[in-house]
Length: 277
Image (cartoon, rainbow, N blue to C red; front, side, top):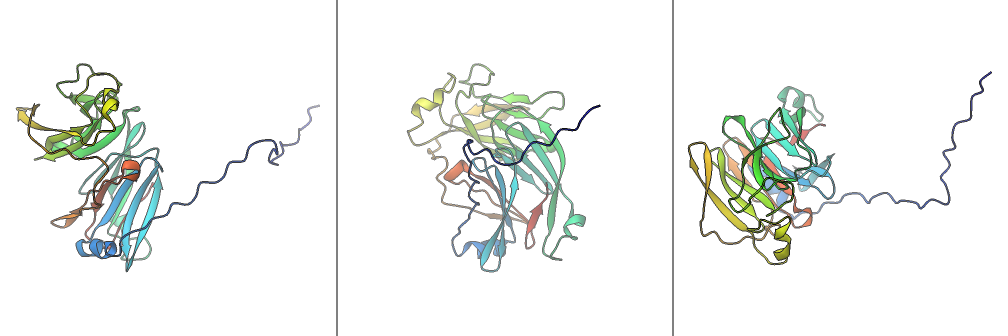
């Protein structure tokens, strides 16, 4: 006859080291920041890979409301109208704004957007530093680990589209720390990297020196061709703060922060936007 054993004790083992709960996240802001968001009718989305959070920053009178969603090391992010993409350690999450759901959120009339998850693409660990929606609905991704720009392909982890001419091989060794992307007319127009190096992690030798390399594209048909241009060096992670730029009914903002190299986007034409996971 089988006997039922007693469940294991849930009493903590006194000999095991105790781990403390992480401190709660805390945000501070300059006094005029809420008024700025209210003036342009925008919410600010910021990723911080160190804390593993997507932060939604929204004005509430004379202070900010910060709403957090947990992701695995989020960094690159792209916003285009009602589409939002968030790049994490091994995948890209894609969200779509559903106004009908936003209208049902409490308090009534306070949300003009609610982004719901609609797709996820597994890329593997390619260190997505930046993303942007391009012409034809393509999502361009800065693939830092493979030192290239890529798009997403349903039959593969990613589809490489371009790499710097000084990088001789497509392999996961982060040769130049490709990190920034600027779009022009729906296509990649500028990129930044931390060095013109072709050795695995070769850019780290000059990491302490300020400045980053900036390159510009000229398109030949559907092929991007790099063009050397005299662009002043810009130190990554030392921006003076958010710089929102209104764009018709939608307002967009981008920001880079020293701690955690945060990435941000602004969204909205009403009091606030919301996201659900």
